[in-house]
Length: 192
Image (cartoon, rainbow, N blue to C red; front, side, top):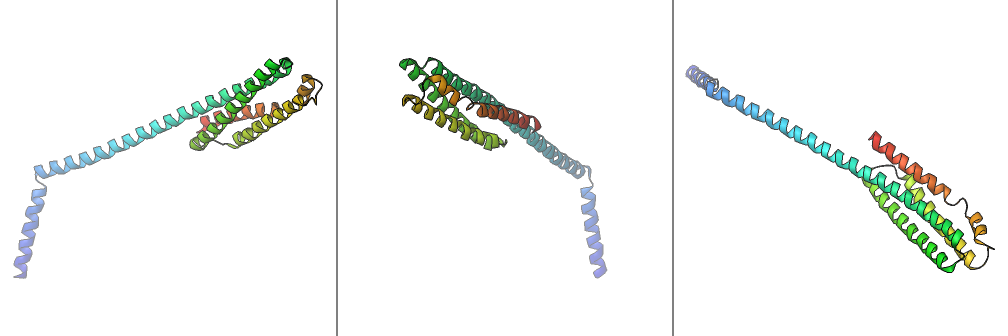
């Protein structure tokens, strides 16, 4: 009896195995394997394409951040020009008011832009040390210029040229920081 059971099982497995080796089953297995490989290949292609799209977007955003930093550098130069205009033409009260308000407006715009750029820096993962120092130094310049304006209004200086000598080097350090910032951002963009 045990031998008959073994023979029966062997016959059933042999029939099952022969069915699996029939052309219909072999074609089905080949078809399923091909579909699986095709699915994995298409999924991998989608992931690579998606990764390239994300990298392309980050490159565009980094370029936008670099252009923003360059624009802020130009605005800072406009702010310094407003200061020079104030010193050159500030004897007239209307001109004094005009250029001091230009200075304040540009200072506010640059500070706001630098803070926006700092937020972008965290998102784009570029080094922000120079940017943080620039924000602090730019704020200090505004405070120093306002102090000099108060001293001018109080009559401490004999003329605006004396005030100019007092403030001669204030804008140099932030101008250098702007250059370092833009150069550092460009270097980061090209290495990543």
